[in-house]
Length: 200
Image 1 (cartoon, one colour):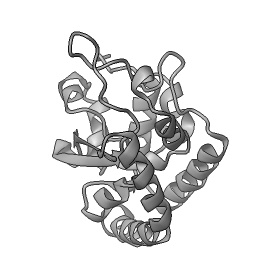
Image 2: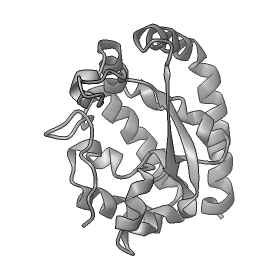
Image 3: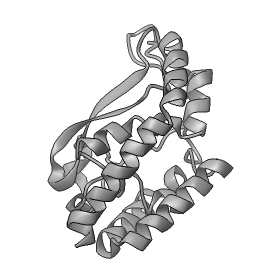
Image 4: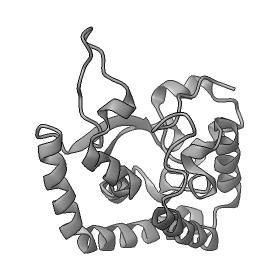
């Protein structure tokens, strides 16, 4: 009952209220990033959702598009702008995904949507993360986020899929707020973002 109906209603109510409540902050971040990223405040990327269906995720753009002498993008660490660093550190870059939640492409809570190129690399067990809608935050995020290994992350994701409940989602929301406040697990030990998944 909760997984199929109540969770969706919960998503709609919280996402709608969140966008209204945070609209002044969203406008402020939008303005800063507009000028920092040459008129491109948003980052769009194709991600797989429930049952592997592709959708376009929306986030605030924290990195510029500067290239090296060979026309290749510079490293993430170099392209991360000062305002982008702040937005990422405070997790404000995730807020536009509330629009994805309203559209039914995502949930507030669930496994994070990763890259389409990872789909053929998953084991049968890892692929179960797509049995539910992907989330803005999830069990893996409150248990380490980018600071844990891919193997640990997938174990947390599949555990969540097996134990979805209203009380678990509330717990994850509470722990997410706590993580954002203490700014824990934003990066991996070796990169400002998570290293690419290359299969098990």
